[in-house]
Length: 402
Image 1: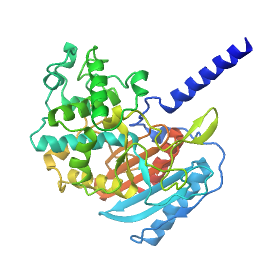
Image 2: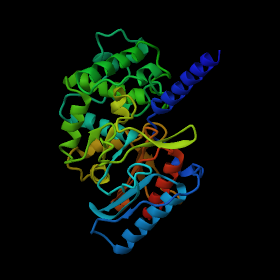
Image 3: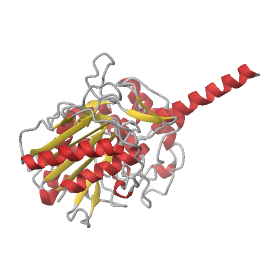
Image 4: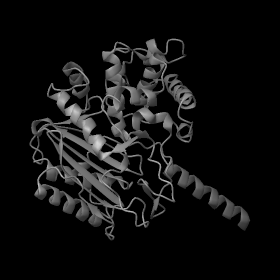
């Protein structure tokens, strides 16, 4: 009996850990400015860095001090930020460790898992396909999956509805889908299509076009539609339509690789059973939901990407027409556009702001662009304490948005 009880408890523990690690979690669109301070006591700082020569020295020092103070105060493993004005880096700072307890400091050029910021990347990739005539915003699920047995209510759902969370798609796939880790390439593309078709066989969660429901599934369906129309894998489409034309050099899928013997990139961290632990360099959500949240890149590349969107909002974009950027940045419901949240001027930021955040529960990232100021601000952390990281990130944004 004792052996049976111990075995049963062990199985329960393994299930709890698996749920915590896999989770189907790809959070985004969190109103982080209203989150409570949930951080535990502070720990020692690993390193502060301010390696970019451009910009005002006072601004750089202020950002470095803020990042160091906030990371210590909120007990985050690592924290980094970059501020770009008129296309030039005016300040950057990073503080903390790549892996908790390793003593290996983060650097400003490290790569960060972006979580749901990936959604705007998927929407941008699709926008490029629209401009090249391969897709239309009005393309429907029924047209794309013409030979598949899908529920009638899904057939009129458009690509634009999928990219604005108004398609009626459920928030996440099943736990069984979340457990799958197919290899990138044909295996992942096939698994993605199968997961999508299983959802499309059932009635939508909401009446399409009537309600906002933040959905990783919806963006995955959109990604699968792009794959079917082009005959290419989503990852290759991102490289072809976003990475190469935007001249991004640090983009990858899933967490950045960081072997134990070198730790040449950050590791994600998560609180399990009350302890904050470092995760493996392949711990992530299933790549099936890649179009909703698996891209990683450096702060510099993230700011370059966001700056092009800022220029596009001002009618000065180089990679898409002003009309297409307007489509990407115009909200449907709940101030949500195609992978961007539009925020009207307020007390803390007296300007119109576009932003998105993301977390796979092991990392956190936030990117903001402010057209009136010609400014981009990006904040990242390799710590999965989402509420804490989000509140810290918005504190950094608010301090640098004026």
